[in-house]
Length: 172
Image (cartoon, rainbow, N blue to C red; front, side):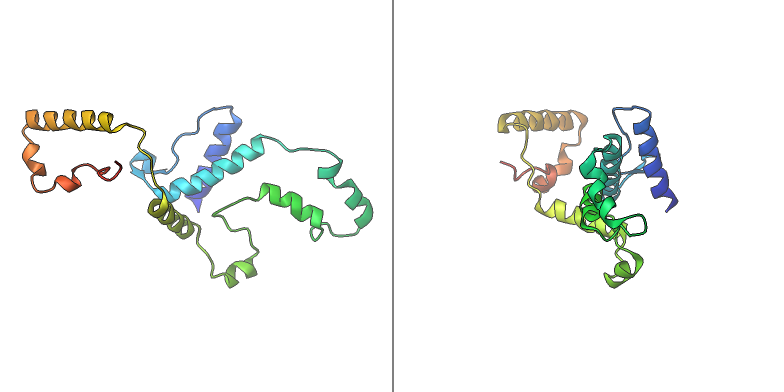
């Protein structure tokens, strides 16, 4: 829990200081470890920080002045549709759970890290990366690697494992 709070506050403080680049998404242990689910959580935190920095529209519609007159000083605004609509503009989390405790328990007590892990698996299983390099460029890079391996005397390592040599064998 502390690590998550520190990560969120670090991003907020960095952004409030005016930095145009936030660094360290997905990194743990001062950058020694990279974790994809943590990257997804960091992305959600940064999205929220950037929305806060963008400011809020303040006018009669967002202030809900008509609703305030209608509900009055002793009414509750939380159950009003206007409140829910405007709250939804700020609560667009994909991973973080915004349910109250009872609803969270009924939904199986979803864990943020597990949800991020499952989302990462889904992305990795379904995303189709288009190679930004042409087949000729890929071949040129591979030729350089092969030549360097031969010069270093490590070319034999790949004998019988050619299909595992380059991870993008199926891109073209």
